Length: 493
Ligand code: GDP
Image 1: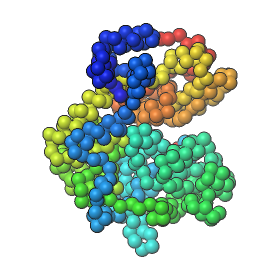
Image 2: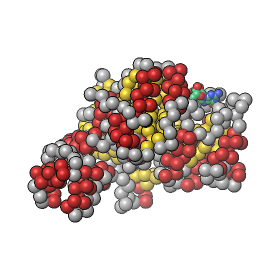
Image 3: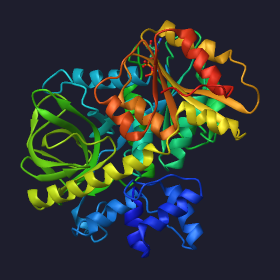
Image 4: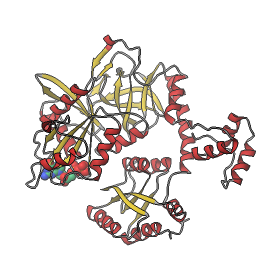
Protein backbone atom coordinates (compact mmCIF):
# COMPACT_ATOMS: atom_id res chain seq x y z
CA UNK A 1 0.00 0.00 0.00
CA UNK A 2 1.25 3.37 -0.94
CA UNK A 3 4.13 1.98 -2.94
CA UNK A 4 5.57 3.72 -5.96
CA UNK A 5 6.08 2.00 -9.28
CA UNK A 6 9.81 2.07 -8.61
CA UNK A 7 9.32 0.13 -5.37
CA UNK A 8 7.00 -2.29 -7.07
CA UNK A 9 9.30 -2.79 -10.04
CA UNK A 10 12.18 -3.52 -7.70
CA UNK A 11 10.10 -6.08 -5.80
CA UNK A 12 9.18 -8.02 -8.90
CA UNK A 13 12.46 -7.51 -10.67
CA UNK A 14 11.46 -5.49 -13.70
CA UNK A 15 12.35 -1.97 -14.66
CA UNK A 16 10.03 0.82 -13.66
CA UNK A 17 9.92 2.43 -17.09
CA UNK A 18 8.25 -0.60 -18.60
CA UNK A 19 5.60 -0.49 -15.89
CA UNK A 20 4.93 3.15 -16.64
CA UNK A 21 4.55 2.24 -20.27
CA UNK A 22 2.29 -0.67 -19.52
CA UNK A 23 0.02 1.48 -17.39
CA UNK A 24 -0.02 4.12 -20.08
CA UNK A 25 -1.30 1.58 -22.57
CA UNK A 26 -3.98 0.68 -20.04
CA UNK A 27 -4.99 4.29 -19.86
CA UNK A 28 -3.31 5.33 -16.65
CA UNK A 29 -0.77 8.09 -16.46
CA UNK A 30 1.58 7.45 -13.62
CA UNK A 31 5.16 8.45 -13.08
CA UNK A 32 7.69 6.01 -11.67
CA UNK A 33 8.14 7.73 -8.33
CA UNK A 34 4.52 8.57 -7.72
CA UNK A 35 2.63 6.42 -5.23
CA UNK A 36 0.02 4.23 -6.85
CA UNK A 37 -3.14 2.82 -5.34
CA UNK A 38 -4.03 -0.80 -4.68
CA UNK A 39 -6.24 -1.12 -7.74
CA UNK A 40 -3.43 0.01 -9.99
CA UNK A 41 -1.06 -2.51 -8.46
CA UNK A 42 -3.64 -5.23 -8.89
CA UNK A 43 -4.17 -4.18 -12.46
CA UNK A 44 -0.46 -4.41 -13.15
CA UNK A 45 -0.34 -7.75 -11.42
CA UNK A 46 -3.00 -9.09 -13.74
CA UNK A 47 -1.14 -7.90 -16.79
CA UNK A 48 2.06 -9.47 -15.55
CA UNK A 49 0.43 -12.64 -14.31
CA UNK A 50 1.42 -11.91 -10.78
CA UNK A 51 -0.90 -12.29 -7.87
CA UNK A 52 -0.68 -8.99 -6.11
CA UNK A 53 -1.56 -9.29 -2.51
CA UNK A 54 -2.32 -5.98 -0.99
CA UNK A 55 -1.15 -5.88 2.59
CA UNK A 56 -3.37 -3.94 4.91
CA UNK A 57 -1.80 -1.05 6.81
CA UNK A 58 -2.55 -2.95 10.02
CA UNK A 59 -0.57 -5.95 8.84
CA UNK A 60 2.19 -3.71 7.68
CA UNK A 61 2.35 -2.02 11.04
CA UNK A 62 2.36 -5.38 12.79
CA UNK A 63 5.35 -6.37 10.68
CA UNK A 64 7.09 -3.14 11.49
CA UNK A 65 6.62 -3.69 15.20
CA UNK A 66 7.72 -7.29 14.92
CA UNK A 67 10.97 -6.12 13.39
CA UNK A 68 11.55 -4.36 16.72
CA UNK A 69 10.46 -7.45 18.60
CA UNK A 70 7.26 -5.81 19.73
CA UNK A 71 3.84 -7.37 19.66
CA UNK A 72 0.79 -5.17 19.83
CA UNK A 73 -2.04 -6.93 21.58
CA UNK A 74 -2.47 -9.45 24.30
CA UNK A 75 0.56 -11.53 24.90
CA UNK A 76 -0.36 -15.18 24.72
CA UNK A 77 2.28 -16.09 27.26
CA UNK A 78 0.71 -13.93 29.92
CA UNK A 79 0.53 -15.77 33.19
CA UNK A 80 -3.05 -16.12 34.47
CA UNK A 81 -1.78 -14.89 37.80
CA UNK A 82 -0.74 -11.55 36.29
CA UNK A 83 -4.20 -10.78 35.00
CA UNK A 84 -6.29 -8.29 36.93
CA UNK A 85 -9.89 -7.25 36.38
CA UNK A 86 -10.27 -4.09 34.37
CA UNK A 87 -13.29 -1.80 33.88
CA UNK A 88 -15.38 -2.12 30.72
CA UNK A 89 -14.82 0.50 28.04
CA UNK A 90 -18.10 1.82 26.69
CA UNK A 91 -19.07 3.72 23.54
CA UNK A 92 -22.37 5.56 23.28
CA UNK A 93 -24.04 5.21 19.90
CA UNK A 94 -27.37 6.04 18.32
CA UNK A 95 -29.32 8.24 15.95
CA UNK A 96 -28.60 11.94 15.78
CA UNK A 97 -30.51 13.99 18.39
CA UNK A 98 -31.48 10.96 20.43
CA UNK A 99 -29.41 12.27 23.33
CA UNK A 100 -25.93 10.74 23.13
CA UNK A 101 -24.14 13.95 24.08
CA UNK A 102 -26.64 14.77 26.79
CA UNK A 103 -26.34 11.29 28.24
CA UNK A 104 -22.54 11.41 28.26
CA UNK A 105 -22.68 14.80 29.96
CA UNK A 106 -25.22 13.60 32.50
CA UNK A 107 -23.21 10.51 33.37
CA UNK A 108 -20.09 12.58 33.72
CA UNK A 109 -21.62 15.22 35.98
CA UNK A 110 -23.68 12.77 38.01
CA UNK A 111 -20.41 11.15 38.96
CA UNK A 112 -18.89 14.43 40.08
CA UNK A 113 -21.76 14.86 42.53
CA UNK A 114 -20.71 11.48 43.87
CA UNK A 115 -17.67 13.27 45.21
CA UNK A 116 -14.78 12.90 42.83
CA UNK A 117 -11.71 14.90 43.70
CA UNK A 118 -11.13 17.92 41.55
CA UNK A 119 -14.79 18.55 40.88
CA UNK A 120 -15.14 19.81 37.35
CA UNK A 121 -14.53 17.33 34.60
CA UNK A 122 -12.88 18.43 31.43
CA UNK A 123 -13.57 17.06 28.05
CA UNK A 124 -10.57 14.94 27.20
CA UNK A 125 -12.31 12.34 25.03
CA UNK A 126 -12.91 9.71 27.67
CA UNK A 127 -13.70 9.53 31.36
CA UNK A 128 -14.22 7.03 34.09
CA UNK A 129 -17.14 6.81 36.51
CA UNK A 130 -17.72 4.84 39.67
CA UNK A 131 -20.86 2.96 40.57
CA UNK A 132 -21.82 0.57 43.28
CA UNK A 133 -23.08 -2.83 42.21
CA UNK A 134 -23.93 -5.40 44.88
CA UNK A 135 -21.91 -3.48 47.39
CA UNK A 136 -18.79 -3.39 45.23
CA UNK A 137 -17.26 -0.22 43.89
CA UNK A 138 -17.11 -0.69 40.13
CA UNK A 139 -15.66 1.55 37.48
CA UNK A 140 -16.71 2.11 33.88
CA UNK A 141 -14.77 3.97 31.19
CA UNK A 142 -16.80 5.98 28.68
CA UNK A 143 -15.46 7.09 25.37
CA UNK A 144 -16.69 10.66 25.38
CA UNK A 145 -17.16 11.24 21.69
CA UNK A 146 -20.78 10.71 20.84
CA UNK A 147 -21.93 9.04 17.71
CA UNK A 148 -20.39 6.09 16.10
CA UNK A 149 -17.83 8.27 14.36
CA UNK A 150 -15.05 7.50 16.78
CA UNK A 151 -16.04 3.88 16.79
CA UNK A 152 -16.06 3.84 13.00
CA UNK A 153 -12.73 5.59 12.76
CA UNK A 154 -11.19 3.09 15.12
CA UNK A 155 -12.72 0.10 13.44
CA UNK A 156 -11.54 1.44 10.11
CA UNK A 157 -8.06 1.24 11.61
CA UNK A 158 -8.73 -2.28 12.73
CA UNK A 159 -8.66 -1.47 16.40
CA UNK A 160 -11.30 -2.41 18.85
CA UNK A 161 -11.80 0.38 21.33
CA UNK A 162 -14.89 -0.69 23.19
CA UNK A 163 -16.12 -3.65 25.16
CA UNK A 164 -19.74 -2.57 25.30
CA UNK A 165 -21.94 -0.28 23.23
CA UNK A 166 -24.73 1.73 24.78
CA UNK A 167 -27.35 2.20 22.10
CA UNK A 168 -29.35 5.36 22.78
CA UNK A 169 -32.86 5.40 21.35
CA UNK A 170 -35.18 8.34 22.00
CA UNK A 171 -38.48 6.99 23.26
CA UNK A 172 -40.42 9.71 21.44
CA UNK A 173 -38.83 8.95 18.10
CA UNK A 174 -38.11 5.23 18.10
CA UNK A 175 -35.68 3.28 15.95
CA UNK A 176 -34.21 5.43 13.17
CA UNK A 177 -31.72 4.74 10.35
CA UNK A 178 -28.64 5.56 12.41
CA UNK A 179 -29.95 3.41 15.26
CA UNK A 180 -29.85 0.47 12.91
CA UNK A 181 -26.48 1.50 11.53
CA UNK A 182 -25.06 1.76 15.03
CA UNK A 183 -26.38 -1.60 16.14
CA UNK A 184 -25.00 -3.18 13.01
CA UNK A 185 -21.60 -1.68 13.72
CA UNK A 186 -21.66 -3.04 17.26
CA UNK A 187 -22.84 -6.47 16.12
CA UNK A 188 -20.19 -6.63 13.42
CA UNK A 189 -17.57 -5.85 16.05
CA UNK A 190 -19.02 -8.49 18.36
CA UNK A 191 -19.64 -5.91 21.05
CA UNK A 192 -22.54 -6.54 23.47
CA UNK A 193 -25.21 -3.85 23.47
CA UNK A 194 -27.06 -2.21 26.37
CA UNK A 195 -30.05 -0.19 25.23
CA UNK A 196 -30.71 3.17 26.86
CA UNK A 197 -34.27 4.17 26.04
CA UNK A 198 -33.90 7.91 26.46
CA UNK A 199 -36.20 10.92 26.88
CA UNK A 200 -38.73 9.03 28.97
CA UNK A 201 -39.53 12.35 30.67
CA UNK A 202 -41.38 13.34 27.53
CA UNK A 203 -45.14 12.82 27.57
CA UNK A 204 -45.09 11.25 24.13
CA UNK A 205 -42.38 8.75 25.09
CA UNK A 206 -43.24 5.17 24.18
CA UNK A 207 -40.50 2.90 25.55
CA UNK A 208 -42.54 -0.24 24.88
CA UNK A 209 -42.62 0.58 21.21
CA UNK A 210 -38.83 0.91 21.17
CA UNK A 211 -38.53 -2.55 22.71
CA UNK A 212 -40.81 -3.98 20.04
CA UNK A 213 -38.91 -2.28 17.24
CA UNK A 214 -35.49 -3.44 18.43
CA UNK A 215 -36.74 -6.98 18.91
CA UNK A 216 -37.14 -7.03 15.15
CA UNK A 217 -33.44 -6.33 14.86
CA UNK A 218 -32.53 -9.17 17.16
CA UNK A 219 -32.14 -7.13 20.33
CA UNK A 220 -34.62 -8.87 22.57
CA UNK A 221 -35.15 -7.32 26.01
CA UNK A 222 -34.44 -9.49 29.02
CA UNK A 223 -37.98 -8.98 30.22
CA UNK A 224 -39.18 -10.59 26.97
CA UNK A 225 -36.88 -13.55 27.47
CA UNK A 226 -33.98 -12.18 25.47
CA UNK A 227 -30.52 -11.31 26.63
CA UNK A 228 -30.28 -7.57 26.03
CA UNK A 229 -30.70 -5.19 28.93
CA UNK A 230 -32.95 -2.21 28.26
CA UNK A 231 -32.97 0.72 30.70
CA UNK A 232 -35.44 3.58 30.49
CA UNK A 233 -33.57 6.80 31.16
CA UNK A 234 -33.82 10.53 30.89
CA UNK A 235 -30.52 12.23 30.28
CA UNK A 236 -32.26 15.55 30.82
CA UNK A 237 -33.88 14.74 34.16
CA UNK A 238 -30.99 12.46 35.14
CA UNK A 239 -33.38 9.58 35.64
CA UNK A 240 -32.17 5.98 36.08
CA UNK A 241 -28.55 6.76 35.27
CA UNK A 242 -27.46 4.48 38.12
CA UNK A 243 -29.57 1.69 36.63
CA UNK A 244 -27.88 2.19 33.29
CA UNK A 245 -24.45 1.95 34.92
CA UNK A 246 -25.52 -1.19 36.72
CA UNK A 247 -26.80 -2.73 33.48
CA UNK A 248 -23.43 -2.04 31.87
CA UNK A 249 -21.55 -3.72 34.70
CA UNK A 250 -23.92 -6.70 34.72
CA UNK A 251 -23.66 -7.11 30.95
CA UNK A 252 -19.88 -7.01 31.19
CA UNK A 253 -19.88 -9.58 33.98
CA UNK A 254 -22.28 -11.85 32.12
CA UNK A 255 -20.62 -11.92 28.73
CA UNK A 256 -17.07 -10.66 28.96
CA UNK A 257 -13.94 -11.66 30.74
CA UNK A 258 -12.32 -8.29 31.16
CA UNK A 259 -8.86 -8.78 32.50
CA UNK A 260 -5.48 -7.41 31.58
CA UNK A 261 -1.89 -7.69 32.65
CA UNK A 262 -1.23 -4.48 34.54
CA UNK A 263 2.40 -5.28 35.11
CA UNK A 264 3.73 -5.08 31.59
CA UNK A 265 4.68 -2.07 29.50
CA UNK A 266 1.62 -0.13 28.46
CA UNK A 267 -0.19 -0.37 25.14
CA UNK A 268 -3.45 1.06 23.98
CA UNK A 269 -5.19 3.48 21.68
CA UNK A 270 -5.27 7.17 20.99
CA UNK A 271 -8.79 8.43 21.65
CA UNK A 272 -8.27 11.99 20.51
CA UNK A 273 -5.42 14.40 20.14
CA UNK A 274 -4.80 18.03 19.36
CA UNK A 275 -2.13 20.66 19.36
CA UNK A 276 -2.31 22.80 22.46
CA UNK A 277 -0.79 26.26 22.21
CA UNK A 278 1.04 26.08 25.46
CA UNK A 279 1.53 22.39 25.96
CA UNK A 280 2.27 21.21 22.45
CA UNK A 281 0.79 17.94 21.16
CA UNK A 282 -1.68 16.52 23.65
CA UNK A 283 -3.20 13.08 23.25
CA UNK A 284 -5.82 11.29 25.26
CA UNK A 285 -4.93 7.63 25.31
CA UNK A 286 -6.79 4.63 26.56
CA UNK A 287 -4.51 2.16 28.25
CA UNK A 288 -5.61 -1.30 27.20
CA UNK A 289 -2.97 -3.37 28.91
CA UNK A 290 0.00 -2.69 31.10
CA UNK A 291 0.58 0.46 33.11
CA UNK A 292 1.70 3.75 31.62
CA UNK A 293 4.09 5.84 33.69
CA UNK A 294 5.40 9.36 33.52
CA UNK A 295 8.83 9.10 31.94
CA UNK A 296 7.99 6.14 29.68
CA UNK A 297 9.29 6.23 26.11
CA UNK A 298 6.26 6.01 23.91
CA UNK A 299 5.31 5.86 20.28
CA UNK A 300 1.76 6.83 19.30
CA UNK A 301 0.97 6.51 15.61
CA UNK A 302 3.65 8.58 13.89
CA UNK A 303 4.40 10.55 17.06
CA UNK A 304 6.98 9.68 19.67
CA UNK A 305 8.35 11.08 22.87
CA UNK A 306 8.65 10.60 26.54
CA UNK A 307 5.59 10.97 28.75
CA UNK A 308 6.26 14.34 30.36
CA UNK A 309 3.05 14.45 32.36
CA UNK A 310 -0.32 12.72 32.50
CA UNK A 311 -3.64 14.23 33.47
CA UNK A 312 -6.97 12.64 34.24
CA UNK A 313 -10.38 13.99 33.25
CA UNK A 314 -10.40 16.23 36.32
CA UNK A 315 -7.13 17.86 35.41
CA UNK A 316 -5.32 16.03 38.19
CA UNK A 317 -1.80 14.84 37.53
CA UNK A 318 -1.38 11.11 37.29
CA UNK A 319 1.89 9.31 37.85
CA UNK A 320 0.59 6.11 36.31
CA UNK A 321 -2.41 4.79 34.38
CA UNK A 322 -3.47 1.14 34.38
CA UNK A 323 -5.76 -0.90 32.12
CA UNK A 324 -8.94 0.84 30.87
CA UNK A 325 -7.76 4.16 32.23
CA UNK A 326 -7.98 7.17 29.92
CA UNK A 327 -5.20 9.68 30.38
CA UNK A 328 -4.10 12.84 28.68
CA UNK A 329 -0.48 12.50 27.70
CA UNK A 330 1.93 15.39 27.24
CA UNK A 331 5.33 15.14 25.64
CA UNK A 332 4.70 13.78 22.15
CA UNK A 333 6.56 15.05 19.10
CA UNK A 334 3.44 15.33 16.94
CA UNK A 335 -0.31 14.89 17.03
CA UNK A 336 -1.34 11.26 16.43
CA UNK A 337 -4.71 10.31 14.92
CA UNK A 338 -7.71 8.95 16.79
CA UNK A 339 -7.69 5.18 16.73
CA UNK A 340 -3.96 4.84 16.25
CA UNK A 341 -2.16 2.68 18.73
CA UNK A 342 0.40 3.68 21.32
CA UNK A 343 3.13 1.50 22.67
CA UNK A 344 5.69 1.94 25.38
CA UNK A 345 9.09 0.92 24.09
CA UNK A 346 12.53 0.38 25.50
CA UNK A 347 14.00 3.79 24.88
CA UNK A 348 13.59 7.07 23.02
CA UNK A 349 15.68 5.91 20.14
CA UNK A 350 13.43 2.99 19.35
CA UNK A 351 10.36 5.18 19.72
CA UNK A 352 11.77 7.62 17.21
CA UNK A 353 12.74 4.93 14.74
CA UNK A 354 9.27 3.38 14.76
CA UNK A 355 7.63 6.78 14.50
CA UNK A 356 9.77 7.77 11.53
CA UNK A 357 8.97 4.57 9.66
CA UNK A 358 5.28 5.05 10.33
CA UNK A 359 5.38 8.62 9.19
CA UNK A 360 7.02 7.70 5.92
CA UNK A 361 4.36 5.08 5.34
CA UNK A 362 1.54 7.43 6.16
CA UNK A 363 2.89 9.93 3.71
CA UNK A 364 3.05 7.36 0.94
CA UNK A 365 -0.37 5.97 1.74
CA UNK A 366 -1.85 9.43 1.76
CA UNK A 367 -0.57 10.12 -1.71
CA UNK A 368 -2.01 6.88 -2.98
CA UNK A 369 -5.33 7.45 -1.30
CA UNK A 370 -5.67 10.91 -2.69
CA UNK A 371 -6.01 9.41 -6.08
CA UNK A 372 -8.86 7.10 -5.20
CA UNK A 373 -11.12 8.99 -2.86
CA UNK A 374 -14.29 10.29 -4.35
CA UNK A 375 -14.90 13.90 -5.21
CA UNK A 376 -18.06 15.34 -6.57
CA UNK A 377 -16.45 15.33 -10.01
CA UNK A 378 -15.56 11.64 -9.70
CA UNK A 379 -19.09 10.95 -8.74
CA UNK A 380 -20.29 12.67 -11.86
CA UNK A 381 -17.82 10.74 -13.97
CA UNK A 382 -18.94 7.38 -12.68
CA UNK A 383 -22.54 8.45 -13.16
CA UNK A 384 -21.79 9.09 -16.77
CA UNK A 385 -20.40 5.61 -17.09
CA UNK A 386 -23.80 4.40 -16.00
CA UNK A 387 -22.69 2.90 -12.73
CA UNK A 388 -25.53 3.18 -10.30
CA UNK A 389 -24.58 5.40 -7.43
CA UNK A 390 -25.12 6.48 -3.95
CA UNK A 391 -23.91 9.88 -2.90
CA UNK A 392 -23.22 10.21 0.81
CA UNK A 393 -23.24 13.67 2.31
CA UNK A 394 -22.44 15.18 5.66
CA UNK A 395 -24.06 18.56 6.19
CA UNK A 396 -22.66 21.19 8.50
CA UNK A 397 -24.23 24.62 8.92
CA UNK A 398 -23.97 27.72 11.07
CA UNK A 399 -27.42 27.36 12.56
CA UNK A 400 -29.80 24.43 12.73
CA UNK A 401 -32.27 26.29 10.48
CA UNK A 402 -29.80 26.35 7.62
CA UNK A 403 -28.95 22.68 8.00
CA UNK A 404 -32.61 21.78 7.96
CA UNK A 405 -33.30 24.01 4.99
CA UNK A 406 -30.43 22.43 3.13
CA UNK A 407 -31.55 18.94 3.95
CA UNK A 408 -35.16 19.70 2.99
CA UNK A 409 -34.06 21.15 -0.31
CA UNK A 410 -31.85 18.15 -0.98
CA UNK A 411 -34.71 15.81 -0.25
CA UNK A 412 -36.71 17.57 -2.95
CA UNK A 413 -34.16 16.98 -5.69
CA UNK A 414 -35.61 14.55 -8.14
CA UNK A 415 -32.75 12.16 -8.72
CA UNK A 416 -34.45 9.27 -10.43
CA UNK A 417 -33.96 5.63 -9.49
CA UNK A 418 -30.31 4.99 -10.25
CA UNK A 419 -29.03 7.54 -7.82
CA UNK A 420 -29.62 7.86 -4.16
CA UNK A 421 -28.65 10.75 -2.00
CA UNK A 422 -27.97 9.93 1.59
CA UNK A 423 -27.33 12.42 4.36
CA UNK A 424 -25.38 10.32 6.80
CA UNK A 425 -24.82 13.03 9.36
CA UNK A 426 -25.67 16.65 9.94
CA UNK A 427 -24.88 19.18 12.59
CA UNK A 428 -24.40 22.76 13.60
CA UNK A 429 -20.95 24.24 13.94
CA UNK A 430 -17.52 24.08 12.42
CA UNK A 431 -16.38 21.09 10.38
CA UNK A 432 -14.46 18.89 12.78
CA UNK A 433 -11.98 16.09 12.47
CA UNK A 434 -14.73 13.73 13.57
CA UNK A 435 -16.79 14.81 10.56
CA UNK A 436 -13.83 14.14 8.30
CA UNK A 437 -13.22 10.74 9.89
CA UNK A 438 -16.80 9.72 9.28
CA UNK A 439 -16.65 11.04 5.72
CA UNK A 440 -13.50 9.03 5.09
CA UNK A 441 -15.01 5.89 6.57
CA UNK A 442 -18.20 6.19 4.53
CA UNK A 443 -16.84 7.79 1.38
CA UNK A 444 -18.91 10.89 1.91
CA UNK A 445 -18.54 14.48 0.82
CA UNK A 446 -18.86 17.22 3.41
CA UNK A 447 -21.02 20.22 2.65
CA UNK A 448 -20.23 23.25 4.78
CA UNK A 449 -22.77 26.01 4.82
CA UNK A 450 -21.49 29.26 6.32
CA UNK A 451 -19.03 27.31 8.42
CA UNK A 452 -15.30 26.84 8.45
CA UNK A 453 -13.15 23.87 9.31
CA UNK A 454 -11.92 23.60 12.85
CA UNK A 455 -8.50 22.64 14.14
CA UNK A 456 -6.84 20.17 11.87
CA UNK A 457 -9.98 19.24 9.93
CA UNK A 458 -8.62 20.58 6.63
CA UNK A 459 -5.29 18.89 7.11
CA UNK A 460 -7.01 15.62 7.92
CA UNK A 461 -9.34 15.98 4.94
CA UNK A 462 -6.31 16.50 2.70
CA UNK A 463 -4.61 13.54 4.20
CA UNK A 464 -7.69 11.33 3.87
CA UNK A 465 -8.67 12.70 0.50
CA UNK A 466 -12.07 13.82 1.73
CA UNK A 467 -13.74 16.56 -0.25
CA UNK A 468 -15.20 19.50 1.65
CA UNK A 469 -17.30 21.96 -0.32
CA UNK A 470 -18.15 25.33 1.14
CA UNK A 471 -21.22 27.37 0.38
CA UNK A 472 -22.77 30.57 1.61
CA UNK A 473 -25.90 30.40 -0.46
CA UNK A 474 -28.23 27.44 -0.18
CA UNK A 475 -29.46 27.44 -3.72
CA UNK A 476 -25.90 27.29 -4.97
CA UNK A 477 -25.21 24.21 -2.89
CA UNK A 478 -28.40 22.61 -4.13
CA UNK A 479 -27.64 23.53 -7.71
CA UNK A 480 -24.21 21.97 -7.65
CA UNK A 481 -25.31 18.80 -5.94
CA UNK A 482 -28.24 18.49 -8.28
CA UNK A 483 -25.96 19.07 -11.23
CA UNK A 484 -23.59 16.38 -10.00
CA UNK A 485 -26.45 14.00 -9.49
CA UNK A 486 -27.65 14.64 -12.99
CA UNK A 487 -24.16 14.29 -14.34
CA UNK A 488 -23.86 17.82 -15.57
CA UNK A 489 -21.40 19.37 -13.20
CA UNK A 490 -18.59 21.24 -14.87
CA UNK A 491 -15.31 20.50 -13.19
CA UNK A 492 -13.93 23.49 -11.35
CA UNK A 493 -10.33 24.46 -11.65
P1 GDP B 1 -27.11 13.56 20.05
O1 GDP B 1 -27.20 14.13 18.66
O2 GDP B 1 -27.55 12.12 20.07
O3 GDP B 1 -25.81 13.76 20.74
O4 GDP B 1 -28.25 14.31 20.90
P2 GDP B 1 -28.09 15.47 21.99
O5 GDP B 1 -27.51 14.93 23.23
O6 GDP B 1 -27.45 16.62 21.35
O7 GDP B 1 -29.61 15.75 22.28
C1 GDP B 1 -30.49 16.22 21.28
C2 GDP B 1 -31.59 17.03 21.89
O8 GDP B 1 -32.40 16.21 22.74
C3 GDP B 1 -31.07 18.15 22.77
O9 GDP B 1 -31.88 19.28 22.58
C4 GDP B 1 -31.20 17.61 24.17
O10 GDP B 1 -31.39 18.62 25.14
C5 GDP B 1 -32.45 16.75 24.05
N1 GDP B 1 -32.45 15.63 25.01
C6 GDP B 1 -31.46 14.74 25.24
N2 GDP B 1 -31.83 13.88 26.19
C7 GDP B 1 -33.06 14.22 26.58
C8 GDP B 1 -33.98 13.69 27.54
O11 GDP B 1 -33.73 12.73 28.27
N3 GDP B 1 -35.21 14.31 27.62
C9 GDP B 1 -35.54 15.38 26.86
N4 GDP B 1 -36.74 15.90 27.02
N5 GDP B 1 -34.70 15.90 25.96
C10 GDP B 1 -33.48 15.34 25.82
